[in-house]
Amino acid sequence: MRTRRPTTWLVLLPLSVLLWSAAGCVERKMFIASVPADADLYLDGKLVGQTPLTLPFTHYGTREFVLRKPGFRTVRELRVMEPPSFQEFPWDIYYETMTSELYKDERNYTFVLGPVDESDTSREVVDTKLAEAKEIRSR
Image (cartoon, rainbow, N blue to C red; front, side, top):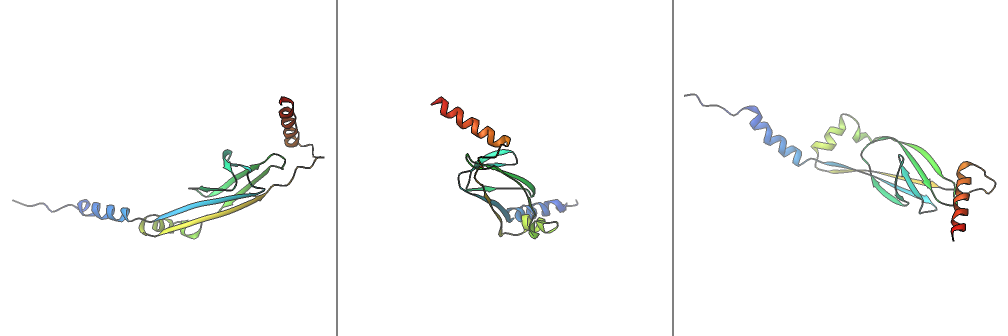
């Protein structure tokens, strides 16, 4: 009677599980601050909190930052987040799966909100003034 030898996948499966369990990781964070602090932060159209704020992120590319605070001009900026060299193909495969070290990608962004100019009649300023007047009248 002929004995069967283990197939290749029986050998490779435990090896691949071992490699994936020892896989490294890339930690991505961005720190957003504003002058003055406590501005509402909208990231890509969603309210995420007030500055200063630390957020994790998973993808690179163009991100929209909108910061709002009563009495200050709204800041709206598009920022391009370029990946670091260890996150570009083919190196990203190695750093995400084959190494046991933790790699960090930390971004720092600071935005300055200027005061509202009283002579400014933009839609945003008019809406802010109307909201303030409505609040005063309701007291």
